[in-house]
Length: 262
Image 1: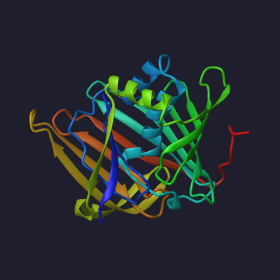
Image 2: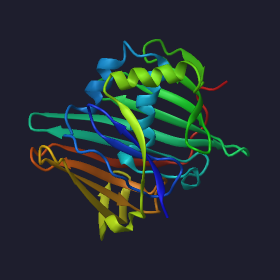
Image 3: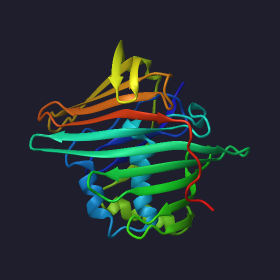
Image 4: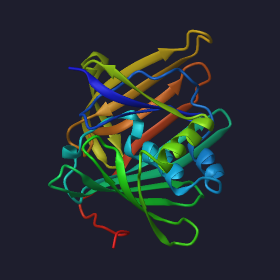
């Protein structure tokens, strides 16, 4: 079986996301972990439109650790909060990310709640409607400065296409690739303890070496069906300079409701 994987390449951290498929991993181009995630987002707040900023937050929160999942992995009202830490030789930074399924519609579309909070930064908060292909169709966003709730309908044939081009000019791009079953990446069965609890999980490992520089990034995922979305922890490590991106689930809740939509 082959899986469709969406890859976001950027100046900060490479993330891989899957459109509506359970537990898969994909190839990513080898680049250093680099600058802390939240610093890049904080720098961009002022100049980006709602749609552009959403596209970045959506990828960072919805596809945490590059792990794809389907909406069936979450029950209505169920969600989880993550702590994501970027560690370099002389700098450590932390962000929190929250995602929850609010409502599953008969059409196959679903409403989700997403929050992205940089350390000492302004919170980005959304309620989004996504279709069967995990593409955003509609969103409500709370302005991080004024608290005002704004509404946006995505039009892939008009202004939002231009937004994507603007993101590419900033150094971000997306592409679709196909990979085989993730079982080939399974290394061992382990016990892992995170903020949300202790779990028996499969450890998946995948390394990529840049052919030009010889630098290697190792990607590690801890997965278990006992948590919504299956992913409980992940690490991306640059083996030469030791920089690492570490994410772990710190809380699971079952009482999420709409907060932004009328």
